[in-house]
Image 1 (tube, rainbow, N blue to C red):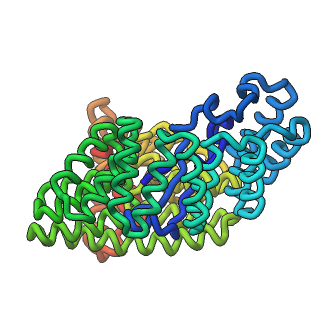
Image 2 (image 1 turned 180 degrees about the vertical axis):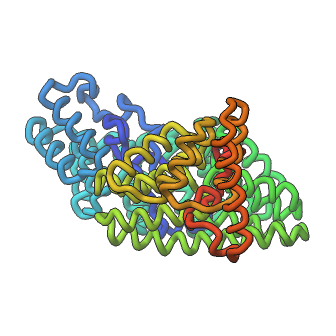
Length: 473
């Protein structure tokens, strides 16, 4: 269940403030983690009474906010806090600045300072319902549901149609299994704003818990009508369909969730259960294997998190993602490695393979060139040979294959293709030499066990890349 952004950095700083709190009881009840969204924060509504709009900030404050924004984007939270503290020093009565700094304290994990800033913002603008809702969300996400509930109550008292506060108050009731109160709050939020997607999703989940399955399905379909890319709503749609024993619809709903968030094992586990109910056992086994792979990914991800300053840790995670055909995520990890160690030849060669697998052959060629300029390696030579072959540049392809000492059927085909070109050009001797080379290579491949038939253990094919048919996956 996505919730409202907790503070004004989301409104004024470009990056906003994102995160999840998997330990929150309301989130667990709904089967999804809480998250922060800036989509419903409007700067004018957030401003304390009598305060100037954000655009009215003097140049000195604007400059500091820009510095804070750049720091948040660059994950330099301490620098953002310093810039915001300087802004507060200039205008210490502006509640918005305290809210912004509280957001960054949350990102920094400094919860005591965050809470203090939220409270200061409320002291400066005690009649602003948004501030109570923001602090309430912060408290709820830290498991302090009683204090959070008091803040949501105050926000609703100040503004009875405050949809986010109503929604969040409903979440606390949902976590406490007070389903009538939860449904009433979600219904009030919908009545106040029929486009508030989260309330439709949350009421659907609540109605599913009370076996109002038809009404629940109506609600979840409305949520998906408003936002077709709402992953949690697709998951809840599948859960409702499962209870209706409509396993075909359940599989379809979970499949859409998997498409939108392929690295979340929960949707796969739910789909596997639906596939078993539908007696589609081969597909269920494939999902079970994918779940096992995701467990392995969690292990390498934890290692990367512990060693975030190590390029090798990110390369290992990227290679694991390549095995799971998550090429875009893999490219991001190889890029992280390159930010830590510029011109790292292995990271460049690995990222080149990721680009190739996604069909971006120009970037792949650039990374191969950079990798080989940094340090010659058979992997980069081998992939660059494949890329030359795609362009029918047979001389360059064969030169790279030879540099890589690569021995496989594709290399033999390259020699045969060049032989045909040379024969057509009247270069009979050169064509015969290429055919002889191809024949010798094929004979060698027959004489060597399959596991030893190539000097290219990390070949494009090993990464799931077929130069003839690859497309963006």
